Structures are given as structure tokens and as C-alpha cells.
Length: 557
Image (cartoon, rainbow, N blue to C red; front, side, top):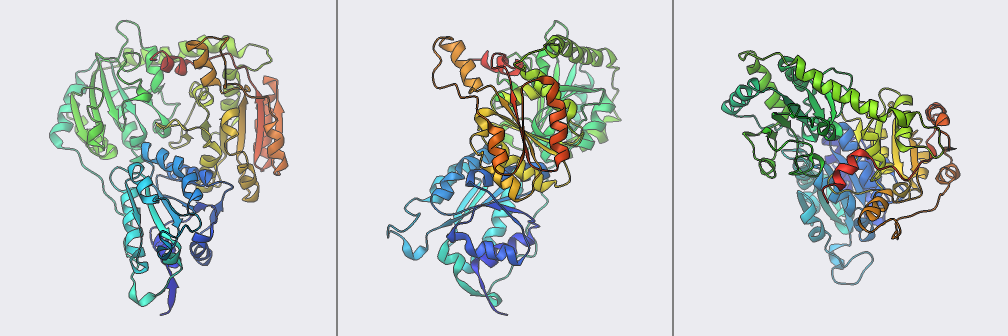
């Protein structure tokens, strides 16, 4: 037995937790962790900004349903990663943030990158934040952090790691790496509530299932399909849950907001089985526009505080979505399920009618390119198993109109924080998680500017991500809001230049192309993927159109 550093103990514990990739940006405080990762052959994808490292860890976690790990050095490294921490907190993403800090012996000495209480800052936006002060306690506390991040309601945790604790030499005979770090904890539903839910759904005339991110994280796809088919119930989805029921499935209705198309008398859902859904912004809150106020709700959610938060429920089941659907499938055979062919046709017809209304847009000649034309060309020309990252207040809303997914976890986009500029970071994490799958980052021109230097990260690490920039030289969502609220002659602080973002990417060694004609976009996407290089396609689009989803959201204000 010999002497090991605190950083070595961190990495040994991460290895025991099956961590295979880490994202970060080097700082002296973290040197022993970097060296230990090298010794244990755990690759570090080093980024140009800590924000991108944090978002990459989020992307990895969301693409794999497993722990993401991000590292940031003390002071500004920590503050740079805070937006990612807050984003992970609101979206329940299991990320471990390892943040360096000044040495314990340097307290109150005005030393470098010190003077702020990192734990105090992180506590309100994490499941747990803690400063490790004793090197021998590192394995126990890192394991505890991992368990907290990945168990129950997932979410971010943060460990503050003073440089003298990480650099300390410890006799490895005095410490023990936990044998079991990860836990399998799934809350089971109460049988009586499952039976009541089945009885009520069997009597419904126009039921729908809403599958949210919680259904994806519990890996409920197979159970969801079985239940939908057994009961003839149409399914709507959002976020990573797209693909739990493939878009090609006859019972798939579309994204949550497309439920608003069921607005005619006798066409509104009367019962909603919400599985892993958090009612709020992405279900239009308490409005009647999307989920009818008259509809009765059966809510399956791992977090009890979400049940009844905004909508009264007929049955509330605080349990794991997959285990609940499994129990519902087991009990479904004992119930009589009516034919729902007419209701299914109503849902299918609504999808067809929405596409028919948009068809004239596809026939426009331009330029400029209508954003609906652009996203349609993207959807039509990407490989079937592409992981899509949506970044930009309007860009992703446009893509929601055409999203087609047959693999869950393949569409990763904005959550409750509403942060923009995280697209390249999320894409890095998704590509590291799935090195053999195509990854496309769809970003607005405002969003791409946040971390545009990450094209260097893509080139250095040979990550063949294709970034498509929807360039309308505007903060379009803000501009449209300003036009509605203050008038078209009162625009201020919402317009950008028509910049050559593709040339920036080319300067970093990436494949690059500018597109101004819609006929050229499909071939440009195929050429970008065929190049095998990270790519940037700068697409000139029209700023005037407002996405239908965003119109619904703005109608609430």
C-alpha cells in the first residue's frame, strides 16, 4: 500500500460509480483530479468555457439516463458553471459538479479565486452541496453525492474541493472505496390507486396519455406502448419523451402543444393520464388552451409536490412511471376497453390538418427562407437515428412542428430555466455519450454566439456535430414580444448583425457553408454529415414569422 492524493480518491470513487467520461476546463485547483483521470483512462472532454462543460455534462446525462460529471476550478470557474447547475436543478438532470476552491489553510487571506462561499451559492439550486475538508472522507462523500444525484428525484449535486484537500497525500490503507455506489430505487404505486385509475380510464370517451421527461428517465417506453395499444389511447409527448412511442406509431398524436388542435366541440380530451409530466410552462399552465380544464386528470409523478400543484387530479400516484405503467398493464386485462377508433381518427385527422395548413409555406420560393421550410428540410435530410439539440427561443419551437423521433432521448432542448446558448455544450455531451450516432445542434444566431468558441472543442476532440444556425440577425423571440407589447417602431436591443458564423467555425477547422436558398439546405446537411467533421451551416431565414407554439405561449401574457 502507498500514498495517494485526494484527487486520486475522487477518481477511484467515480470509477466505482461507472463514470466513463468527464467534462471540464483545467484549473490548478483540479490538477490532481486531471492526473488521476489520466491514470485511470477516464477521458476528459475539455471545453473552452466552464458553461459549456456544465451543459455537456447535462447533455450526457440526458442522452444516457445516467450521471453526468462536470469540473470547474475555483472562483470564476465555479461562477461560470452556475447557469448549468440551475438548469440541471429545474430540469431534474443528474449531474455531479466537482468545483475546486482555495485551500482550507488560506481562509480569509485574500488569496486567488477565493472570498466567496461556493457551497452557500450552490445550496438553493442543488439537491445537495458540500465542502469536503478531510481527505480520508472523499470516497464516502463522493459516493453520497452520486447516490443523491441519481436516486429518487434526480438532480444536480455539487462538491466544493479545496486544493489542499485534493493535493493531500493519504495512506491508501486508511481509506476504503465504497463497493456499491449506485442504487436502484424505484417507488412502487399503491395497487388500489392503480385499479381506480384503470376503472376511470376504461369509462373515458376521449382519453389521452401525456408522456413527459419523467417517463423517459424511468425508461418507460415499452410499458407505455403496451398500455396505449391495449387501451387504444392516443399519446402526446414532450422533451426527451419524444420517441418513447415512435412518431410513426398510429397512436402518436404529437407534442403537447398540438393537443390544442383538438378544440372543436366533442373533440376535447375528457381524461388525461399524465405520466412523468410537470404541469406548468410546457403544458400552458392552468389555461384551457392545451389541456382542457374540463378534463379529468390521473397524474403519475415521482415527486408528490407536483401532483395537484396546478391542476386538480382525480387520481394522484406518487410513484415511478415505469413501475406504474407496468402495474397498469398487469391490471388492464381485467377491464373492458371500448373501441376508440373514432377518437383515434379525430387525433390523426388533427395531425393531417395541421400539416395541410402549413403546406403553402413549403411552396414559397423566397429568399429569405421561411423558418418552417428550414426545419422541414432538416427533418427530411438527417439520418433516422440523429440526436437533435434545440437551442434558441424560437428555433426549437419551429422544430417542434416537424420533430419525428423513433428513439427516446433523441431530442434535447430547453427546459424550465429557459436558458439559451447551451446548444453546443449539450451537443458535446450527447456526442460523447453516443459516438456512433449523428448529432445535430439547431441553434438561433443569438444562441450560437454564447459559446461559439466551442467549435474549437469539436475540432480538437473530433466530434462530428453538425450545427445549423437559424440566422435571422435578431433575438427573434424578444423582438416579437417587443413588437406585440411596445410596437414595431419601438424595437431596441433585440436586433443583431447578419454575421458569418460559419466562417468562425471554419477558422477553428470545421466544415462550413452558408445557405440562402431552401433548395440548397438539404444537400448542405447531407454534405456536412458526409464530411465526418464538425460542421456549421449558416442559414438565412426570415425574422417575421412567429412559431405557432410561441404564439400560444405569448397569448398567455
